[in-house]
Structure formats: structure tokens, C-alpha cells
Length: 424
Image (cartoon, rainbow, N blue to C red):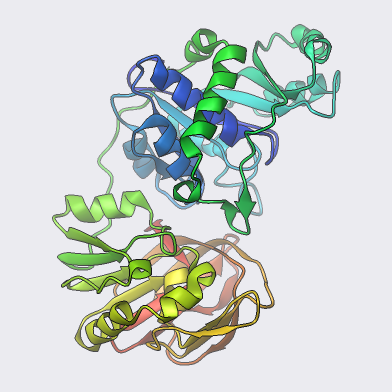
């Protein structure tokens, strides 16, 4: 792949193997001395950390629903070639019309698409799938196909013979392989930092790709990325920002932290799980993550909790999703045990009766540190048992339908279940 070029890895649906193949491609290209970068389409906190481990380079989200086109182009720009992993199916996006799909990212950046087809339970039927995807939208160029989960040499021959008349090159055929599964939990894959065998897993994926994909032919389809315009940054909420960063609070968008840092703010990471006190700062940010998995440990983190409460007397504290739950009075875990949280907001949440909350949100601030209008995303299984007080945001869904007000604010403390992505 050429410097300053890009390529998109997409699929007809989720579960096709995009993540494993993308990780294998990133590592295989890196092993050849190519300074490749990864990116992830959509509001995903977990896959980008796998990309970083595979490529050894920072990975950003490219969200065509929530981000302005100039933001996407700015994040995609760089010297090294860029490999973008799509989310869900190629044309899947927010209701009603699929806005925010990986196809929208392809249009914004003018990049070609490599389609990953899960062929485990089909043979000749792969051909109409490839035909349909290549002809559905003339603005999207599907340059080639990678067949995944191929059962045998005979199976591969049948697939290739069926696709050959379509004049869409088959760039590789990945055999079924044990030992490269990606374990998951309710928000997606288990986090990269939680996998003891992460490098071994990525190396095995790279071996499979190196042996079964024509990397030269694939790289030839990479196109030059557009010139990056000047994107309006998100202003930092303070000069010195303390941010929780560990396995319980890992879901912070890198592009927002980058904006803050470039504007001159000092980012001070700390770990609540290690019972570290909040650093001396003007603002505390508790991102989302998995506090429910560590609720007992967090409830007993006396130095962290005491410093957080002391900070909140005179200075702002903000929590998103998991961080929001941490600011409440209590959290009930999946086993039904209640754990006392920071007690800074009149909020009780529970995972004993899980309920999915999922979708893009447009937020208008009523109070709090992030004034104005924002594009955001909500994805969690927590139930709210009690939330009393002043709401933080007016909210709408992706179709513009009004939702109940979101979040809470009390004194210097505020938060909500929504993850802010970009200015609306």
C-alpha cells in the first residue's frame, strides 16, 4: 500500500470475520516493513485497541453519522497507508436510511472496498451475494473479495468458479482455523488489554492472511486519501484534565483527547482500579467501560473515592456511561449484589435485569460542562432504577424523534449514558 493511501475492509453482515482478517492484514503488512495504520468505522471502543496492537500505531474511529466530513478526512490523513475496518454490513447504518454506514465512509474518503464473505455454509450461492453488493450502489467500488472460513480446496474451487464470471477478483481464501476466535461479552469483544495471548492471536491471524491472501494485488487497490481540511476541534473543558484509564474505564474517544491535548490541555491519566487518588486537576473525566465487572473493587477503592468526592466539592466531575454509573449512589451487578458507588449523583443502576439501550443520539445541553449541541451514541445494558434531579441533556434519536431527557447534574457533578462523539 502506498503512503497516504487507504482501503476499506467490509462485509455483507456482522460476524463475517472482518476483525480477524483486518488484524491479520495489519500485522502482515507491518511485518513487511509497511508503516500501516488502522481505523474503525462507527462508534466502537474495543476494536481500535486491537488495531493498535496489530499495527503498532494509533487507531481512530471514523463515524459517518456523528462526525462532520472534514473530521473524518482529518483523522484519516497521515503518511502511512490506512486500513479501515467496517462495522456491521457494508450498507448498514442508522434508521431510517442507513446513514453512517461504512459505505458513507467510503464515499467521504473516495476509497475502494474489499468485501469479506463468510463462505462457511455456502458454495455457488456466494456469487449472487457478491453480484448484489457490487451492483447495488454504483458510487461504491468493490475492488475484490476475500472468502472466509473456507472448508477445503474443493470448497474453494467451487467458490472461485461461481464468482469468476462476475469479474470481481478473489484476492484470498481463508480456511477455517481453530485458535483464532475472538472472545466477546455484552458490549463486544473482550478488551485487547485483557487478552494474555493477544500477540500470539494476532501473529496467527497474520500467518493465515500471509499464506492465503494476495497482499500485492490487495494493496494495488488502495487509493490516495483526500487532502485533509481544517476540522474544528472540540474545546477542552479545562486546562488540567484528570481522566480515569484502566480496564473499568477504557472507553474514551482518542480524537477528543487529541483535540484537548492539541488545544494545550494537560491530560492526567489515573487508575481507579489501582485505588489511585484523583490527580490535582481542574476537571475529572470518568469515561465508559465495564465498572459492573469490577464493582466490588471500585466500591472498596477508598483513596480514589475520597479524592473524587473532595474534588467534586469545588471542581467539575463528568461521567459517561460507566463513569456516570460510578458517580451514582449504587450499582447492582449481574448477580444481584448492590455496591456503593461515589454517591455524587442521586442515581441507582442495575445489571440484574439487563436491558439493551442502543442508538445514535443528538444532545442539546441544558447544564454541565459541554454546552451546545452534540452527536453522541448510547450502548449499554444497565437499567436505571432511580434518577432524580436536574437532567443534563435534551435528546433525540437518529430519526429526530424526541427521547426522555438524559443524564443528571447536581452542583459540580454531571454525566449521562451517552458518549459524545462530535459537535452536531
